Length: 310
Image (cartoon, rainbow, N blue to C red; front, side, top):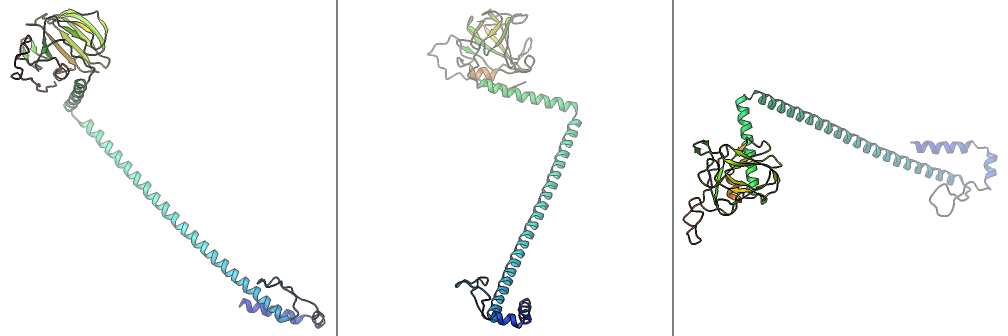
């Protein structure tokens, strides 16, 4: 419709031109067209009105085509923008859902923590004591296992020794809270670990020592024949005395105790599993210390202890 209107407008304009002007132009070029170029704006001289109108018609057609192409492009661009906007809305909605979900999880975790705190507050004192005792027991077991498997821990008695698991045995003076390492009278005694050693007289065991390691582990030994050095710093393997039968002992042996750190003294733990693993110069308890190599060792059995920890 717009094309027809443009053609009629141009035709009317030409019809209104003065006849003198029209005749004057008959002998002069009106437009320019160059070569075979398709563009209607490059024209060579033509003298007829039909040529002009045909070129104008082409210009209008090209303009309409470009308007249509531009409109299509704008429509496609609008569609793209709409798609982007829709995706943005979806993303924003998803983020909102994630935020809500996280808040719900945080609230649930807080409720669980509050519930556990309330349960702990409601635990009876007896249960708390039992839980603390169990915790200490498991920590002590872990300590024993580490020392039993440590190549740095030194067996405290030299030469041939024998012993069994006498932990918690009933003795004339009460419950036995250590292990008795039976050996030759005068055998060297070694510091099992690095630490600070103190020598003193015990009313029951006679000459005794206590050794405190850097981590708080506490060692006690008694029935010594003599002290090997002055109190002070020692290294694992240092000679700290000689085996004897002092105090109430009925024969040469070292009464040996272990109290696990960091609590140390008072936190008694059965040392049998440590010496059983680290004292490789051991013979069965039934075999005499002065046995000969010809004696049959197969008839004697080692005791592996009863794994009592308290």
